[in-house]
Each structure stands twice: as structure tokens, then as C-alpha cells.
Length: 245
Image 1 (cartoon, helix red, strand yellow):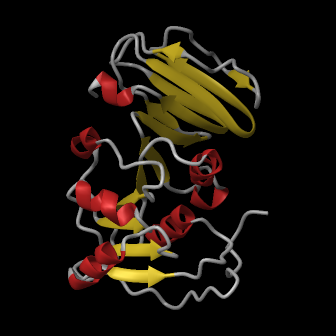
Image 2: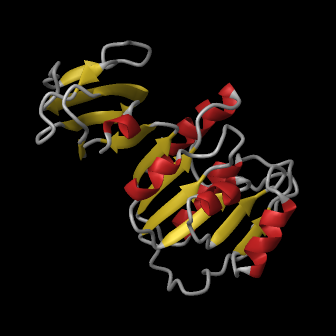
């Protein structure tokens, strides 16, 4: 059942103060995932929007540092963050919110919740590729939770880009001509109409477990878009960094 999370075993969730210099607006938040799967590709940096808020999940503090992102909030059980990185973050004025290791949420989810509580309306997750398969799947799955349904959610993971699109929203795909685009329904069937893709969909149903939406291509970068008329869809450009857009 989706809804406010139960407190983790031994977890404390006191009142979180707004980071210094931020007045609670936090409209665009960058959330940097832990680096257990490797650090994000440095080419991601120029493609990120200017943030109002930067939240690092555990060892995501190292990835944020590598990308030159000043972190407002570091959150997680800090089991994978280097102590020196945590100490340096504290010295730089970063708010550090440490949770017990025995908790009910992964660190990325804690970071997403924190960004929401600080007023984010658009969230861009940054993560490396590889690492544990279960954690990689969980990191993507958590982005699709209903609790984030009112937000614009996208992510850069490895060399790929993805966006969560919910009915009745429409999302521009961008990309270069011939670039791969896959559409994956989440949590049930989705009804989709596309423009500017090589294999058009016109109010067609995409079913979970079906490969119907896999390996489409950008035909017209000017008009490429996905309209979700029912359900939730992950729009994935697996080679977005290589496309240069």
C-alpha cells in the first residue's frame, strides 16, 4: 500500500530544517544516488538543470563532489560514504541526516522524500551504472511510486536517461534521429500515443511484461513525444549520453 512511510526500525524522523541559503522553494532538486554501482559519467554534468536543492544519498556525496555539485543535504545510513567525505560535508555547511542501518527504506528513497519535504517540484536523479542488480532495479522502481505522482521525475543512470510519465501527461523525448527509445508500462497496462517515433502508437495499450514498447527510434527530433492517456510509463533513452543531447 502506498502512502506515508512507516518509521524504520529505530529510525528517527525529527523536523528537518531547510538548508542554509534555501528559502524552502527547492523547485528543482538534484538527487545523487549512492555510488555502489560506480560514479556517474562526468558528461552528465552539463546536461543537468540548475538546481535549487542538491540532496546526496549516502556515498552519493562522493559523486556529487566529482560533478562539482554543492550538496545541501546528505541523507542515509552512511554505511558506504567515506568518513572524510561526511566530515568535509559537515565542514562545508551541508546538513547531514543519518539514519540507522536497519531501516525500511533504501537511501535513495530517503533522499527523494527529503527533496519532496523541502518543496521540490521537479526531481532529477543522478546515478552510476552497474552494481547490485536488486539495488539497480529498486532505484528505478522507487522513482515510479505514487507518492511522487505530483512531481516531474527523471533520471540519468549510467549512459541512459529516463522519465516517469503519468496520465494525462505528455513528455518530449528529444534525442537524435535514429536514437533508441523504449516505453515500459509500470504497475499495469498503459495507453500511449506517440509522435515523431519510427513505430507510432495511436492510443495503444502497452502491457506489463510485453516487449511492445521496446526499441523504438526517434524519427523526428523536433516532434518526438510520448502522450500517456492512461497508466504510468517509463520513457527510456538507453544511449542518451552518446546522443549528445
